[in-house]
Image (tube, rainbow, N blue to C red; front, side, top):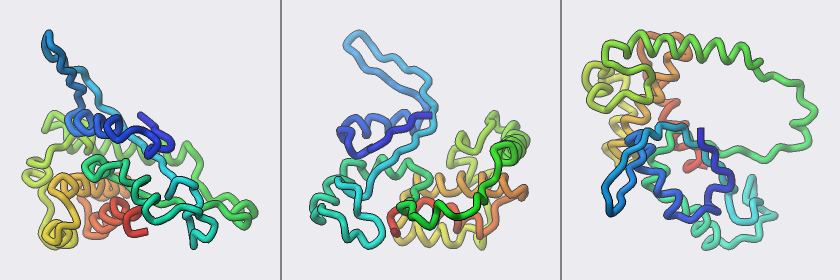
Length: 207
């Protein structure tokens, strides 16, 4: 896993250099003496403040940034890079009241068992295709042998038609929906899984 904290503080060209290995799982280096390809399949996690001062959360009354400053700050993460980020979430500031709430989180062992069961379901389904995880499934298989019924993908199809999603984003939502179904021990994704996967992809933008 590659975690980049304060992602907009990196130069845009550095962030955009991640696009090709994210897509292909390979890092290709071009030099005068030739070209070399190295395996580079990884999970990318980006964290960013909502603005340069970091205070544009909630009503944003304490933020000292102008709208132009905010746009320039977030624009350092290009559209093509964000198109390769499957889950985009806005996390609200922790309030004082949150510290007094009883812990309701699942323990690590419970989560690990559910993830392991999901990975086993993926392996059983994808082994005939020579793959192990949903992240490896190409679009031709998602929209071919693993194609879902039109009623299930209706909301996704409409998003593509309206230009809300790119073709790459369409396939990425499908992969995430399959993962959500695996975690819930369902044989195939349902319309709710598609909707949730689409929501998770657009949550930060909508907020």
